[in-house]
Image 1: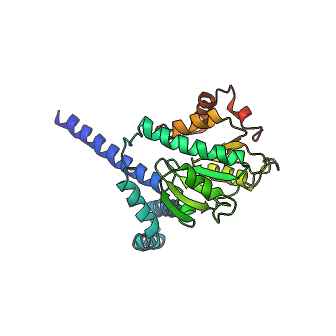
Image 2: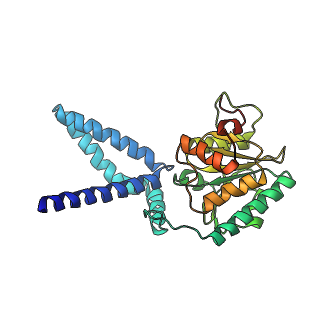
Image 3: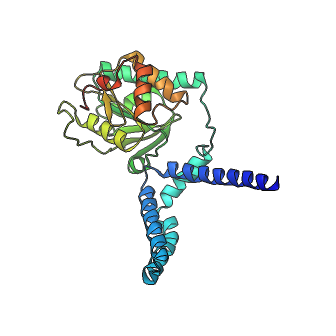
Length: 283
């Protein structure tokens, strides 16, 4: 009985620690710190191999390097660590995340759809990036911080042609407009049609390196496109945009992988084949 209880406690202990490590890594993904973690992980594996083979000089060198890195990390990556602590304070760390009420979600959806309708009607280009689990700190820290409520008027004014921020993207989460004037990585895959402009390539680029959901308003055609996981759906209808946003703000995970992406788009857009709805981008 005591042995079984001890094993049960060990399993709980391992599960809690594993979850903590997982959530910390999720918060760091999309920042410069994740690259350091990959490097440290590689050095740790190399250290284990060197110790196993009794390579004393290499073992000493790697141990010294890792100790130096442990001292340098808090200094070099102070902005990332501060961001992570801020996210922990917002409750992003907990297993049970806060679910937005239906009224709160409707207010945000109405503000965004109202702004998109105005932008479409006046053919004003726009790029809205909806952050999910993968952090986008590398793109917001070099942009103009907003940290403001999601309102229709503010979104329209940001993308107004004479506004200094209109050329960049706006990054937002479920609760606020995080930053404006954000410059995103451009997708340069050769199979992408020349029909797509800089906004569409930027939308595809950020969707390839994160789980963000990106809405694009075309300045030339006045239509709305969606970029998710490196896929593009063109000419979305108003009810499709509204349904997508309700899924996002209601606290449901919209995409977690390629299969989930296809299933979700099929449910949201009432289409039989999500790849066909992607406009033939991926052959």
